[in-house]
Length: 122
Image (tube, rainbow, N blue to C red; front, top):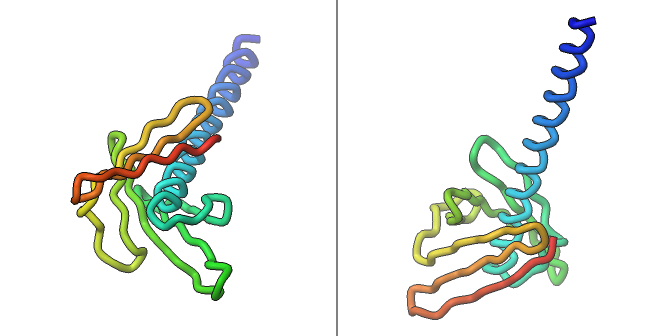
C-alpha cells in the first residue's frame, strides 16, 4: 500500500512540475513575442516562437510582401535583450517587462530619453 501511495505522489509531482515548467516556457515565449511586437509594430498573434536553450526565437510573416522576419530574445531578471536571429544583440535601447496574471507590459526606453509602453492581455 505504501509503495502505491508513493507512486501516486511521485506521478502527481512529476505531472505538476512538468506543467509548471511548460507554463513558464509558454510565459517566456509570450513575453518574447510581445517584445518583438512592441519593437516592430506587429501583432504578437501573427508571431511564432520557440525556445532553444536560453534563447527564444521569434518569427513572423509580413502580410504586405510575404517577407519572413526572424529575431532572437533573451529574458533575464525582468530585462529583454533582442536582435535579428542571425545578427548582433541590440543593446542601444533598454527593454523591460512585467507580468501578472492578466497582462504583460513591455517598456522600451530609447537612447533619446523617450519610451514606449505596451500592454498585452494574456
